[in-house]
Length: 185
Image (cartoon, one colour):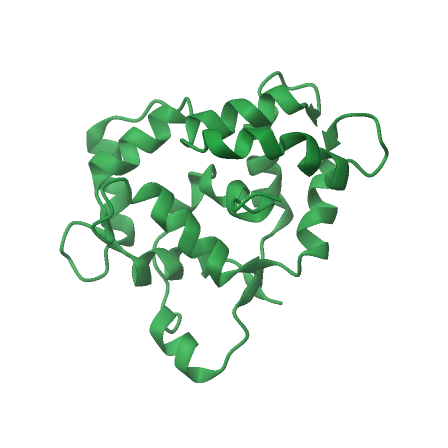
């Protein structure tokens, strides 16, 4: 498969987590040093939202073209050649599409969302590579995904996650946001 895992891709396109308030969970750095298992299970509602983002024509299944469109929007053109191989693995019933059940099955088989998947999603939003996500970067990425979001709304999203008050989302803040509603696997 490509360098872009299926789960990483799923989380890169979900904007809902940006609207959550950070919780009092232990930080990403604390989790790393504590020995806690760093895999998480997303809930079905979140997975449905991600699936629906892929399924642009709302026919209940994802075709290869819909998958490629999202890859392009994320700037992952190099992974487009891997789409047939991805579909061969994920399309369990062999109909040429990925339905919601298959979408969930891939997530279950992979053991949940890994820390590396979330870090890769962070790097996708961190467009300038400075280790922080700004409201401008959120707005640009959502725009690439076909989501209309004002700069003011993007600033509110960043503020909801920004626990240190610097006006940006750090990796630690992003990790906390992405895992606060996930259950430990």
